[in-house]
Amino acid sequence: MEKKDKIIGSILWSIALPEFPQILNSRYLKGILFIALEFLINVRANFNEAIRFSFIGNIEGAVSQVNYQWLMFYPCLYFFAMWDAFKDSGGGKQPYFYLPFFSSAAFVTVGVIYSAQTKVFGVLLGSVWFPMLCVIPGLIIGFSLKLILKIK
Image (tube, rainbow, N blue to C red; front, top):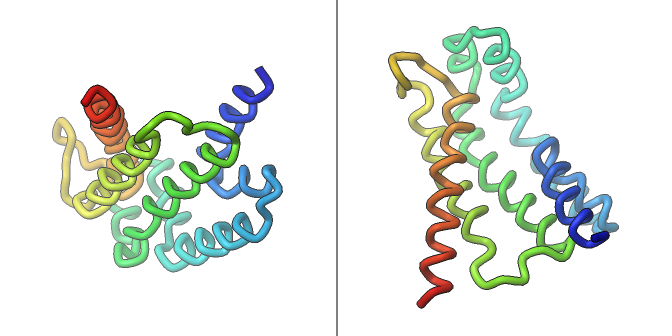
């Protein structure tokens, strides 16, 4: 039960800040590197201001704040750090366990690209909510590919 708790804890901490589990797993150099990269990307992308605007409902303001050249790096770093924490915590012993993380990173990156212009049911979700919504098809495709490749 302790291993399962560690794996679940790593995933939950990763949602908040993907680098925390590396620190908790005593992978200090890796954790500090990931934190530095996330901080750099976050600041250069002006992502916190976009998050703030999105939470108060000013989607157009959020879209105008974002530096998309930098924000496009964020999903890959985020999901790679999550995958790494999952693996370091003892998860991922099954074949192709990385596919849901990879697929989510790819879908969210594409979501960032289209976030300034894509509307869902006529509503612009912007640079925060639309990419978050793209996690769903990313996970579905990733788990489906994992299942298909495991069967063959």
